[in-house]
Image (cartoon, rainbow over all chains, first blue to last red; front, side):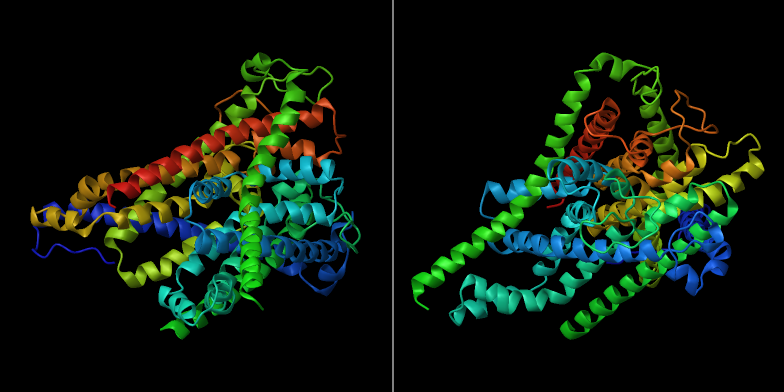
Length: 291
Length: 296
């Protein structure tokens, strides 16, 4: 939608306020975008010299020049795969129920309100939940599994909301045609609705995971280690992830560690950029098919 | 497959999916349960009154005081600074994008703003500590290396896209008839925006503001990295402070055994944080619902 424009030319004096508001909007946006530019420039200036093959393949070290992110990268990979494995079936299942079977009474409405509220709970609170529930009560310890379960709960509302959004774009006629051919409700969902909504669902999933990959606070709270000179080898291993490794380096006073942190940030941002690029490509293909 | 078996399978699948949906309710119950259990344990050793009104927070010292006010003050201080950036900035950019910008400009600016919102918070922490604070020190020589100002500004920058995008949705929802009416009466775009469109979208805009405040209160890594680790009851933005979230991080970094009072403090502080943000979120979603009804 584009706003209608006044057609009659107004005297210049009356347009001063108009111009003022417009330029303030432009200035704010320019400032915000140049701050983003400054952030990227600052990080790249500090960190790009540190990025080389040994940095990617070395473990953390007390000597900044020899420290690398291998342990954190493998940890991030483990945690992301497990988070996806836990959050995706649960989130898609919940979304399908609410969108396809839901609207059937108070329970669905209550669940809906609850999901919206959960989406606004600070991530560090999920960390406390993970600490109390997974680490202590369920005895998982400070493991990859406990961290993934915590992050899975954290992104669950995002997965549910975006999947519902995708399901809503599937035209009703598709469902009706399927029913007319004698398909049951589940057959319709499984063979028609889900395949048709798949690109939209995938886009949402990637965005949810790109939120999880940058999360630091909940994993610190459940006790992910900040100094890990090894890679996790099972779901019960202690672990660290890239953002925590960055946090660890930022917290040290020596400039050499800040350089490592900047290099770690570049790697993290590149991972995020890749995930978002994949999401855009998927969405693009989806839109073209439906055009 | 007979009709009844198929019916049975359909029924089973629906139940399984219902279970998935109820999982989210269990998450809420889990959060409240865990927080309540540990908070009760905490208050069996510390008086509620001391916790809520005490002005000293030294739970990790040998002489322990459990007054949460310094942490709340730190949180409020950083949040106020962040809101001073995010609320006017977000609203202005929303007005610009919704009322002034050409569709081509919007199509480019909006995704870039979303990039700002997608940067991990630990990266913003780095930016606040090693770029913004040193830059501010050029003008404010008295500014401490850890302070509330730098992280507050950076946090505002992080939240600005949220305010901008939600407010713009609210502005968009105002029917064009109202704009046309204002133009027909000879209003400029500024007059239309300020006197007709913004008032018309007010509950939607307020909802986005409140959500932004809640986000600022719960934000963790920026303040844990750049605001310092010193709980103090001050409104001075140039000295190190500590927020509620930064305290939870500080304790979590050490290996605190379960069941100790130190372990329970983070849940008591978490409870406080949860109550504050949850209350704000409820108000925000109530406002948004009301807004939707207005133009339904």
